[in-house]
Length: 79
Image (cartoon, rainbow, N blue to C red):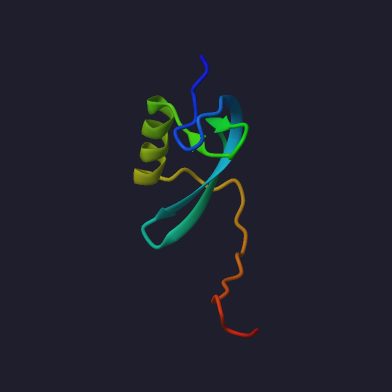
């Protein structure tokens, strides 16, 4: 199945991606998520089953594979 990108009209390909999520006040990454990714602009699309699984993970997060620190910057302010 080939899905056309809604942003630019080019074809998408099936890939595994990392999603960035805010679950409440917690920033999380989920790795190895199946997605349709536009070959031109990089826009990502997810099948309904994948979205349902991500929603389940949000409601009852599994044990994290690893934890990492993320630096936070403010745009327009000198370091």
